[in-house]
Length: 104
Image 1 (spheres, rainbow, N blue to C red):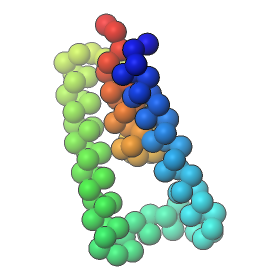
Image 2 (cartoon, rainbow, N blue to C red):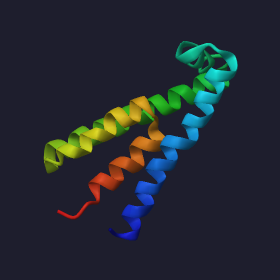
Image 3 (cartoon, helix red, strand yellow):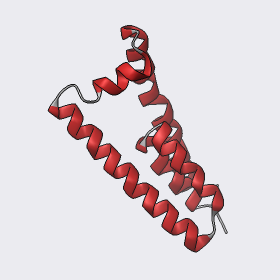
């Protein structure tokens, strides 16, 4: 595996674990669960702006993945879409780059 692919994989793992630590900590601390976490994303204009920023980035990444999968027929790259929306762009983007750069 190339050093670049190892970096992408490391970033995908980091992007899955690091933000999830804070999400789980918040939900445990407040006892509100996922609905409380989602409510917190819209608590003020700053967090709402960040939420929309990441949502737009996730949609753009999804469009890119779909367009490339249609061209390259790299079906395994579709795994990055649920990773993006269930975990976050910080996991989905490097995961997609990892899957995209595999040797053909």
